[in-house]
Each structure stands twice: as structure tokens, then as C-alpha cells.
Amino acid sequence: MAPHRERHGLRQTFDRASEVYHQARPDYPEELIDHLILVTGLRRGDHLLEIGCGTGKATLPLARRGFGITCVELSARLADAARQNLSAYPNVEVVDRIFEHWPLPPDRRFDLAFAATAWHWIDPEVRYRKVWESLRPQGHLAFWGARHVFPIDGDSFFLEVQEVYEEIGEGLAPGGAWPRPGELEGQRAEIANTGLFEVVDVRHFDWETSYSAQEYIDLLNTFSGHIVMEQWKRDRLYSEIRRRLATRANGRLRRHWGAVLHVAQRIDQVALP
Image 1 (cartoon, rainbow, N blue to C red):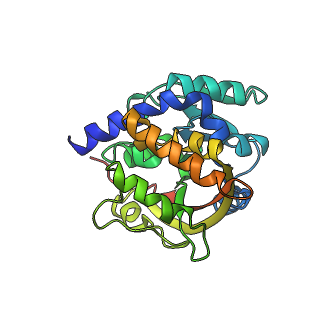
Image 2: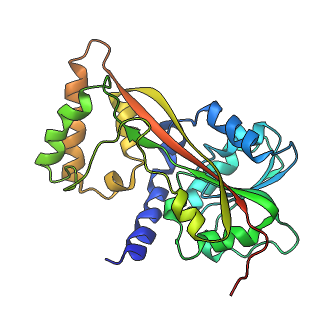
């Protein structure tokens, strides 16, 4: 399957996770949100564009800080969940459209366009150019993800459960690696190579979350790879997760998360084709 077709198909799967997504996915660190605001110089009342808001995990902390936000989300179910979660903020609008096909509002240019764990789903042939067009002069682009990282003193559960992934044919791909905190790849060169943005800051953030067996299974059910996994594989994997965690005194595991926040500023004087 061609990469763009595979990306398009997988990103549609999150519609199936709408009921558990908001509760299962981790909150982003407040330090990340505060740093984003500091670096971009945002002020209360500025208007932001969010690409792929999901259920509003990144939208909520920015809405609480007084920003107006237009959110574009391709999943109708996730968009409905986001509207409910953000109903207390009248300056937040959620549009259920595919970002690549969404017409930019003719009467508004945004102070910041951002994507939280969604940027990699957007067509790379479209995303930078369209964001550039959406921003006011000297406006900013920001994006980050939330990835599993593996500190030296991390939970041994993940190494142990790999034998189950191998058994069901879902093991680590050849050449794959488990990144340590601070080892996630940045996209500084990719941003610079567009000629549309100047990199302002790239910074790593790490945090830890604790899960019960059911909480962790709910989390896995929000990942595209597990959503499309054959049912017998999920049944085998999830039964082993429950069995193994049941042998622990507290019945829980620790998962470490990493995010790389990229912030770039619009280059206003560019020659567009």
C-alpha cells in the first residue's frame, strides 16, 4: 500500500476509539503548554488553529488560558466528543473536516497553528504550505507527539510482554528500537527545508503515567495498530496483560511518555509557485 494511502486509511480508524479516547490518552504536561506560549509570545485572546484536535486533549489547556481556537478534526465522532468537552468555551469551534480539504476562512489568519499527536497524519505535500497560508505575518507553527520512551529504570513489564507480541506476529519491526527519554527524533531539518518556516525551538518533555490492566487496554485501543489488529491477537494480548498485572501487588504498570515540541515562525518573504 502506498504510504499516503496507508496513512489516510489508518487515520480514519480513530473514529472507533471515540468512547475511550479522552479518558485513556494522557494529558500533555502543563510545562509543555506553558513553554509553547512563552516561545511564541501568545497573548490571551489570540486565535489559534488546531489540526486534528481529537477529543480536545491539547485544546482544553489552551482554551482555559483564554485563547480562541478553531479545531479541524476529520473524525465526526471525535469532533462530537470534543464539542462536549469544550462546551464551556464559546471561543472554541470544532469543524469536522479533513484538514487537507478544509477551505481556509477568508476573513481570518491565525496567530498559531498547532497539532498534538496529529501532524504526522497530515499529507506532507500539503501541511506546511497550507499552514503557512493560514497564518498571519510572523505567526507560528507548533507540533508535538506523545511517544512511548523507555528509561533505564523504567517498568520491566514492556520487555516481558514483548514475547506475546512476537507470538502473535506483532513484534518490533526489524531495525526497530526502543528510544530512551530525550532520544526521540526531531524534525528541525524538515521544517527548515520547506523554506516557509524558521525553527524557533525544539525541546523534549518527558512524563510518567500509571495504569491498571483495563486502563492500559483502553489506551491500547486508541492506537491505530491495535485498532486494526485481528481480534484473536487482541484477545491473546489483552488476556496476557490482565494475567501478568494480576500478579503484581498493586496490579499496575508505569508507562513513560516523551514529546518533542517543535516551534517555528512563518517566513513572510517567500516566493510561492
